[in-house]
Length: 367
Image 1 (cartoon, helix red, strand yellow):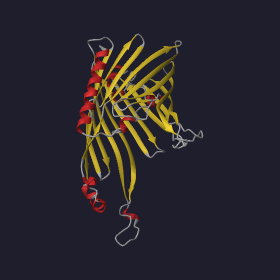
Image 2: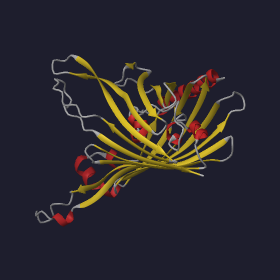
Image 3: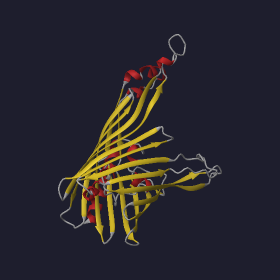
């Protein structure tokens, strides 16, 4: 049965990709703010979650995991800053079981850059600089996820779920977009092994962009570029994430969870471990060691990429991640460090220093 579900998801993804490619040229990286990830636990493990998501964040990673919620009411909050604090990434969710066989979650994501200076009118009509003419605006992406999960009556241990995504993207007074998409996921447990399958944007996600022509008319008149004042449609193609995990118990108090995810994308070549014109494969590996289910230490590897050196040779790079967590009486505090700073001298075109990102997430479950 699990094989049939996986096969059905692959067929739906393939059909959606063919329809999208036939209708409009799609960008390779659309709605990427939804691929950053949420939660200190997940980000500390290299975004490995499809098979092991079991708390309020499951509405994002795999809605089928909502059936493992520990309490009646479950709340999670997260804040992270990227690129030395320029980009703010925030997440909030509430999840609860409806009965013994179903659960739901409501999640909100915001990723944005605030206080951007609009200097178009910095020089007034007399040719003088007037700083009072500088206006500030924000560029932000928002997503509302409505998730639902239910136990399957066909196979013991099989959980299924889905999420409806409502997207709003805003570029100050210049443009905004509205979008909608669907995700679907399953989880299965067998003899200490956990399996997960998550189909993101399974119907393709459409963003309808509307531009404010009044803000571009002057520039368009100078450049003659009519594209500046035209509306457009942006499409996000499906992505399939397959995961597996196994828990190893060392003694009554110490155990380790080993997990792996494999991302399948269908939008052409990407800079990942395995790529082709049709399909690209991006692996993630994660490890979580716990002491008495109270203290957690995590690590993970993702973003395996090939970079070009100055001598035009190729070398492989990957992103290490680390995290710690504490859980007690329904309260969970998770910290993660991603994009670890690398100061080792290299001869590639990219910077020798990568900025680290600190993620803080807080969860609370109660009856």
